[in-house]
Structure formats: C-alpha cells, structure tokens
Image (tube, rainbow over all chains, first blue to last red; front, top):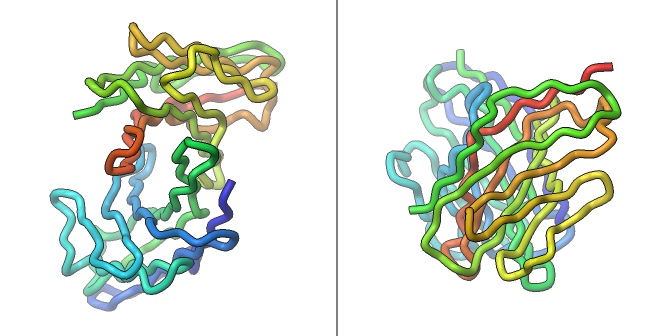
Length: 117
Length: 115
C-alpha cells in the first residue's frame, strides 16, 4: 500500500489566523488526493478532491475560499484553513488513491488535529 | 446515490473470541469495491481488507475475512481469535469502479476487545 504523511500532526492557532496542512505521498506519484474532516466519534466527511495541476473539486457545503487546496506536485497537496475560527477545530485527514492490480484503494495519512482558540 | 449502513454502533467481546461486524450498502452500480478500514485510538486509518464486487470468493487476510453477499448488498467482517490490538473503530466503505473515486463510509462500529 501507499505511504502517506501529514504535517503537522497537531496545531493550535488563534482565531483569525491561517493554518497550512501538508499531505505527502512518500512512495508513489499521486495525481489525486483527498481531504477529509472527522469530528469526534463520527465518520469521515469528504471535503474535496485534490487534482494535480488543476483546481480542487469541493463537496457541497464546503467553502472553497475558506479551505484552500493546492496540489502543486505529484507528491504534495496542501490544505490551508483561512481565517480559522473555533468551529474549524477538527481532525483533518488526507488520502491518496493507489491502483493495486485493478482495484482502486485509498490510503490515509495519520491526520492533523487542529484546535482554534 | 450510494449509501453504507453499519447498524452496530458499539460491540464488545472477550479476547480470543470471534466477532462479526455488519455492513449493508445501497447502489445501482454493478462494478464496485468494498473495504473495511480500522481506526485505532491513534486515529490512523488502516486498510483491513478489500473485496471486488465481481469476485464471488470472499476476501481473507489472516484473521480477517468477509462475507460478501452481493444480491443482499451485505458485506460483513469477521475477526477470528480477536486480540487486544483489534480494539478500534471499524468503518465499512464503498467505491464505484472507474467512477469519481469517492469513498462512501458507513457510520462506524466501535469494537472493544476485553482481556
């Protein structure tokens, strides 16, 4: 399976500031990455699909101007939470799609815990 | 739209017992993949097992096996000889083959293995 890293693993910021989260595919080139948000004791909610070299595709209800996604290379996608507020506090997880044989499988990063004060 | 339903919010068994987690899904597609992911307290999502819908044979990975019933749209996970390290949230997930590549997750089942 693919190996995915995220940085930072946790971050605390003040309300109104911006925070950047990096997602790296360490062992293969990922044309597509995904960003999820997870609230405590809940399932993962897809925020957006990050496509290398093009604009991200956002899910309904996700503010694209607030959650900026940049897929600058085949190994790096970044999520920037702009003008963060306490309600943006959450666990953010990225994943990459890897084709194993003919099966498309998503492999996940370790997640980033964001706390906005 | 595809949906995935896990009807057991929580389960608890003794170490070494066998436990089965339920999952049903709804889709009009014929070609798709199903997955079980595990999320331990570290919150790292780990792939447990996957099944291609066109395969009749149930997937098996060591102590983990599935019971895939395509007609019933059921995809249960059996964990044999459960271990303390199996304690985690388990998510059933679905993806359409060659589609938008979006994973659809169930609500999750919190499994606790007791010593």
